[in-house]
Amino acid sequence: MAALRLFQPRSPSGRRKAGSPSGCTSPSSRAGWRRWPPRKASPFHHAESGSATLTRWLGEGPSRLPGYATHQLGVAGAVLDENTGRVLVVQDRNKTVNAWKFPGGLANPGEDIGDTAVREVFEETGIKSEFKSILSIRQQHQHPGAFGKSDMYIICRLEPSSFNINFCQQECLRCEWMDLDELARTKHATPITSNVAKLLLYGYREGFDKIDITMREFPAVYTGRFYKLYHRELPESYRNMT
Image (cartoon, rainbow, N blue to C red; front, side, top):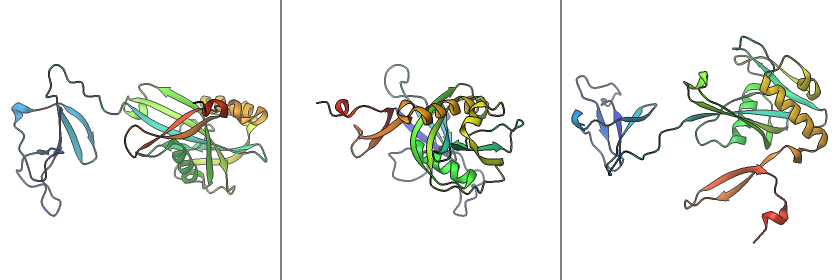
């Protein structure tokens, strides 16, 4: 398999050179411009800001190169104040129906799930918090907001470390601390918010160990890398089995 990246030749000032052909570079090349003859044209694999990647399978048979990303990842934070039983909720400004929901947004490349939840909550509401667990995962295919790709939406349980709301008025119409029991019963919440509020209320009353999906970090098979494994809590006697 060979992978190439297309670019537009540009002058030192950043302007595209008039009459210059599109070119491509190989990850193994040291420097320079290359012409890529049309007869050797390869199919597009993916495009990102500033580049487009083409591929050409050099082995026998059809290409076995995996496709590019198939999902986008959204993360929301259910910030629960255990002392008062209140949870942080917002109403999006750009929605036609002003339903209550948990603050959240899309994960940045290379960003951990918990970090996304904490960041998005702070950006939308001004509330600082700490990641505690994952509560739920929603998978939706052909998502209109993801250019028809599949969407993964994860809701995390967060613990607040500040309480004074200073919400982003560009994104949010309203923001408040709402009684969790009220959120679980109201008709003015999005369906996923209503369902997760009931789950969170159950954990609040009966113990979060009954609902939490926790995280542990392990070394990956790739040298110097680590991964995060999310699962229900495992008793110590099983974790330390040899």
